[in-house]
Image (cartoon, rainbow, N blue to C red; front, side, top):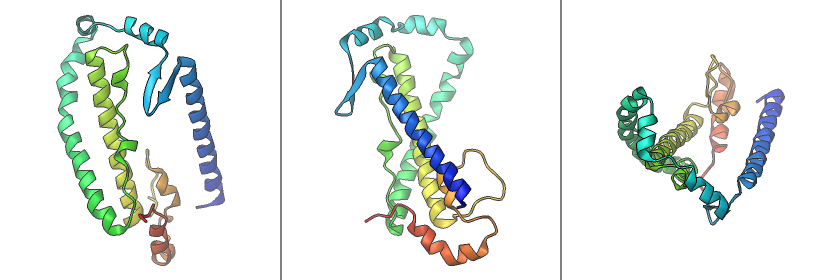
Length: 195
C-alpha cells in the first residue's frame, strides 16, 4: 500500500474516532447510559418516550397504502436472511478453523436493541428487530466474505467498485504477478489468526 493511501486510511480512522466521540456526547445529551450492556434512560426521559408512542391502530391508518402493501414482500426476506445467517456461520466454523483464521463474532454485527425503546409501538419494534437482524446478518456475511477474499484472492480489482471492504486497501495491485507469487503466504498471515 502506498504512503498516500496509508495516510488517507489513517485520516479515515481518526475521523471514525471523532464520530465515536460525537456519538458518545449525543448519548449524554439524550440522557442515557449503559449499565452492563443495557441502556438505561433517566426516568423523566422514559416517561416522555411513553407519551410519544403512537398507537398501533393510528399507526396503521396513517401509513401510506403502498407501504402496507409491500410489508409482506419485505418480511418474506426473513427466510433467505436466516439461511444466509446459518450458512455463513457454518462456513466460517469449518473453513476458518481449517485455515487458522479468527472467526467473525456474530454479536458484533447483529445488534438488536431498538425494540426496548418505549416510544415505539409493537409494529415499529418488530420493524426495528427485523432491520437490525437483516442489516446485521448482511454485515456479518460481508466480513466473512472479506476475510475469505483476503485469504484466497487478495488482489485489487482493475475497475473501482462501490462499497468495497477495508481489507482491499492492503491487497496486491492488479497485475502485480511478482508480489502475488512471492508474498501470498505473508498476506495470509496478515489476516486475524486464531491462537
